[in-house]
Image (cartoon, rainbow, N blue to C red):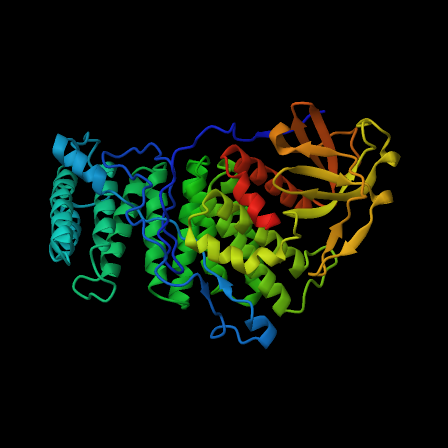
Length: 501
């Protein structure tokens, strides 16, 4: 049978992912391996700040959304914003080695020397007016100011030097971090606005400069956060999402850009009218899922997907539950949210933010399993059976494996939580050990019954199943891949403690 496979990790050690900078309602650049840059000063997706959260994980949403007492009992999950743009290491390297001279393309015919000189003067005035809060900040800013002068000189020599424009934008963006939010001379917003102008000019000269679109989106997002939930903030968030979209189109293999795109959409969904919100939220979900499928252990995107599903469950419950029978119920959305948060915690068990979130949502899991649901399966040992012999039955997933419960002999008792618990007398017709899995993928084949096909390939051969819907298939694909990734990273014991303790 043909499958469109996405290979699971091979269990080898990945590069360490820097700690996130947990800032409320932030959309900074997440952390992963650095990507190739076209400019002399590149952006490494590293975290300058590895401290823990600056405030509590759970924030009440009573002020913005008056609710009943039962609804208010469910606090809001904070998003994992990830890290900020970090350029100091690259600046230091360049300044020490004396690199950074740029080639000189043809002179621009769209920017007059007088206009360019005015822009240069305005930007340098902002840079020179910054004073660090301490000795380290002052030293850092001296390096940035020196770099800015070099890029300004390069642009005066050649106004079409898009590398210099891009690097200067990075300097301005980094300088904004040396300015306190309440400063007025210069203001953080003014520096970010000037950085955005440089990014705009750089991408006009080089429309394929995906790094510029990516960091430009970060700068716009930082400006949007300063404006709260206003019309101006809404427009800025829309601009940020468009730039993330351009960055992804130019560099599709970037889980960081997809994760940030999802975060920006999540922020935008909190501002737009209610009739637009659900569409934007579902788009954000798709971006987080896409990021995870590019990097299965990208714990920030995993956690962020959990928070957006939690928020969707809250909204669905607040509006009276799922009105369409095909819509996912709030209970199922809470359970899905708990799966992703549990997986993020298993991958990074020392993160206090993930640990606190898990305490909130653990009871929403179908314990002692991570996931319980229905799939249509052939008779055991007969994968090529006629469609009429395929039966819909219950499957369970935990840290050890994926198992089918024989519906004919299944006996259920009610646990104290009211969830169904399987007795020892049940038969499991199909059992797949996590350690035996080689890949998990969606599949389509005429030998399968109509519907959303699922292929679990193992060292013993493939297993083919059919999910109730394409949305249900997405949930199974993610859950099985996450459990395998946790196993491959040597964290199965952490997941076992979550579902069994």
